[in-house]
Image 1 (tube, rainbow, N blue to C red):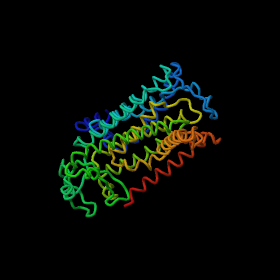
Image 2: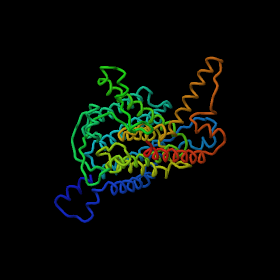
Image 3: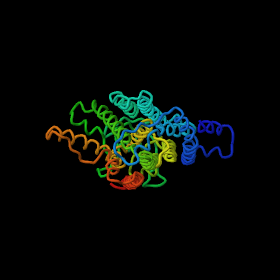
Image 4: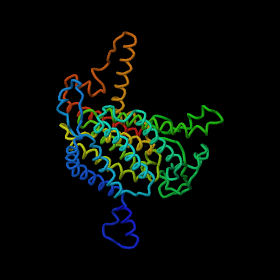
Length: 419
């Protein structure tokens, strides 16, 4: 709103400092500071209100050290994060940008699913929460929204050479003259196209097209490309949101990991939305994605601000309201920036936590069927509980997971230069 206000005022009046709102870097910095202030400032009031409503965590006795001390700690603290994301975004971002509109929908959508899950657990006293089928339906629906928007919006385009666009039969949305990074001062004809391309290191050309998978269908390949892309988006949204949900098991782990991932996505959004840097790194220049830096700054500020109350010993838990939301946001951001194939590395913490649960459950069922008694690979899953069972304090586990997350984050940024 402030962006649009100052943008309109600048057309008629010369207000000192108003032009700062034209710069993404200024608005992103402002958004992060505002998000931190909202999370820390409103957080205490929201926690007191949650206590007043007796919205406390019910803890099952799993034999973990310090577990019963968490009994009664307010949950549904993800509300703090959602407010800290949405308020700065609405104030400082360009709301005409399709990517901003999409991320607002993703934040609210996944937040509502998590809120319903928490509400059923707390107020209905049903420990199972929202039935899995409804939760999955919500995640699949969001995947459809993201996928269809990416396929149909004319703002969602990739810039490329006309020859390449013609060779691959991409639909051209607009032709432009762009400065040639290799020949300064010269202009080169380029086009904006609709495609299902995504960046991926290690492959020739640093890119992959989902249309290649549909080539297996022969003459009907074109009809299946959109379907394959949407299925991939649904899988990614579902997998990452569930992964972040599983990671939210000890104080500060999910919030801190999400902040690290958000920082990397902010870098990727900035370079993808800057034509000069994108050309230099040989990644897609994605018009309008630079505006995503403002949203990601709000997301980053919300995650860090939430840690003020969620770090050990936690005064509030994010609940599914927060954990499902941050997973959905991370997945959608990666898809929008066409970096979704980097997620297994970037979200390595979420990935390992999910795999540990899958391995534990599968092995237990297999051994029970074969030997009559289930056996376990880990002392307990998800993986962070295994380390707790080994006697490692949860604050040390969280710190070490953050260190691994930083290593994965730096490794992901390095891939920008790998050809």
